[in-house]
Image (cartoon, rainbow, N blue to C red; front, side, top):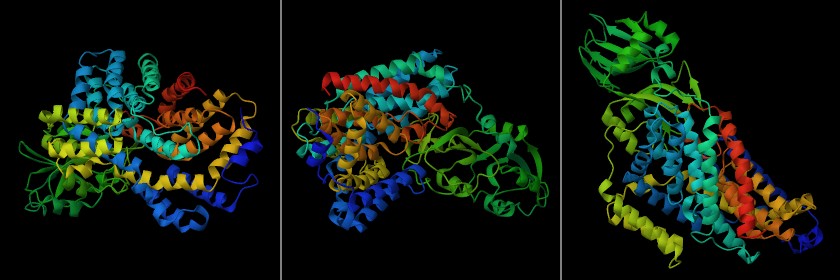
Length: 619
């Protein structure tokens, strides 16, 4: 029997009357957090730390004391996510995911539909057990190569890759950090709502499987037709990035003051806007030369700069232009170095830094030739540009440098390295450990937290992971985000803000059927997830959804599931989910491309998910 509005408020944690000062302060902090998440003025981990500080400073109104403020770091969900990220890192070191992608794509040939099927089939099931962020990072080069071999634009496959990973995350409790966090919130609210409890490993697998199947069929038979070919198949990187407009060959003339010096001397003489990307001597080429590389008369320097600086080179002392535009790019194509794109990853040391071409060459042994930021090509000056997650750099590097970059965590290499180095002999051990973690948690011998931590120890003991690799495997911004938003959720609940928002929903819902209200919560969560992070959406909306369900006499668990599923469907833009950012540059996408394919998928899945919840758990 639905509660009346008065009865609902009478049972809520706040008096019926009225908006309190505590609520207003907490709402202000929530709005502050949403603005920071949306504008990205601060890195996400810094925003999370700031939230803790603000909540504790405003303790008289938020009720968050220092101990509660830092409780997110010791929260079961946070530690479980940390352990699962490490386990995913161990699996990725064995090369299993890449090998699966290659095998599934072997039969695809030149059929775009088969290629999409291979992409979805290789991604979704794996994402049910491994964190989908490293899965997508590992498969971006595999899928790009599949597209190029099949004469298909990578743009047709990369968004489906990202979306399939999000769909697969709903297969199990450990498929995504959002599920683990939602499970913890559900358990915490269980004292108020008896229907709520901690999720079991396969609590919602039956619905997750339906969502994966429906979403996959959409991507295979409809979705790829809605995506334009932004990047031509077998694209010419130099042409795509208009490198010919910014690259020139200059020769060191007899008597030049640069003769007998080094690349460092040439860089100092040319200025900070000019970067030496190759040194050509007779038939020998030095790709991404070090600053100490010696120079001689007759050496040809291939430099990358902007148009104004190219003009200035004509008057530079000791050098003379010997080629530009097509001529210069011809020399680059003929070089032994590999041209490829590097995508700035989530935990990269490059995030937030200004692009320093000299430092980049020394640190990564690669020369930067072009930059694409937020899907847009950056022409002219790239020196000093601030880098963000998802920005894509066109580089030229020796093959061994590309191998090292592929093994690191700073960038995602958008094509497979020629000599990948994986611990393939450890693959059976890694799979056995992961299965053990899942089985122990599923049979409830021990909580998922304990089984996951035991799995981490096993990965190190068996040599799947080196001890120093544990920290590299963790996406620390996610850990800090969880630690920051968990106390924010506690403040929203304890201040009565969640109950007040739920009351507003109850009043607005009026005579609407419970299943319609459930659907509206799904849509609200999905929209919010596309603006802020999925974890923040779950923290803010699950308490409101549970209270609203109780207010209209519906099943709170059904509403919790609707929010949980919707939080993993960031299909409307590139910024709602990190995997969407990873494919932004390599796919050459524009912002609207995501909504073009994602909006219909969002609507279809909202209906399928809500109906599935109603059938399996009741509303």
